[in-house]
Image 1 (tube, helix red, strand yellow):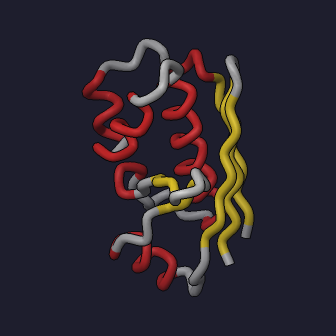
Image 2 (cartoon, rainbow, N blue to C red):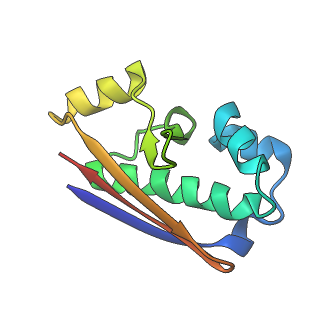
Length: 114
């Protein structure tokens, strides 16, 4: 199953810290704040969350419970928490692969769930 999303980065420019904290985890916010273009990164994380929901066709999934992290080589992945494990088990899936891309104006993500 595949999900894809694209978002205009300017959509996130006027969000408040509280707004970001409702959707993004502390680790995601810390990671994004390491960059001058933090909004691009957060928009990319949002795209992953939206793509994950689309791939599973399950609107009951909580965005705040989907956490995007990076391995030692910088490759993004969805943190395999108990919540994510339960969602995958519910959908009879076991593996998730993601890809994120962003530029000045747009961010996009693709999620493959097998």
